[in-house]
Amino acid sequence: MENSADRPPRAGHLAISEPSAWVRRFAPLVRAGGSVLDLACGGGRHARFFAGRGHPVLAIDRDTAPVADLAGPAVEILSHDMEDGGPWPLEGLTFAAVVVVNYLHRPLFPFLRAAVAPGGVLIYETFARGNERYSRPRNPAHLLEEGELLRLAGDGLSVVAFEQGIVERVPCPGVVQRLCAVAARPDPQPLYPPTLP
Image (cartoon, one colour):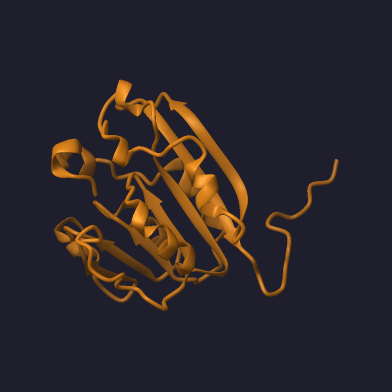
């Protein structure tokens, strides 16, 4: 959710139905059956994806009309304007995964970190500085600074993977940052099985 003057037309944004490759890549890290928060869910592509993998999903956005068809036992829909200065609506709730794609509102960062349950995963992907040369968003308020998602992870989350740079995706190339980070587990286990030569 960006300011209306700074975002592409809704039809184009909602036309993307496939989950992000970054989200698909790290979805196996989410505990089986664990709840997923899809923040700024847009057209619901990630809510659909995780519900299809057997996760209960809470999908939140200012405009939930595009995901109304998802409401049911597997997907709870919450209409909330996260930029109106009101209280965080999920105080005290934690999730096995917090997923944020193509959305940036920095005042939410502390709440997002707190919403990741022990052993939970934060999967974040959005536009970064330099994107203004390609397409919207162009407003610096909606573009990550270099390494900003790493700073979001801070000391409380262990970084599994981080990328930043130009992506040549069709139909809209741009500059993005991507992060997958995991909260400390009460019983530490390796994230991946060890690979032997």
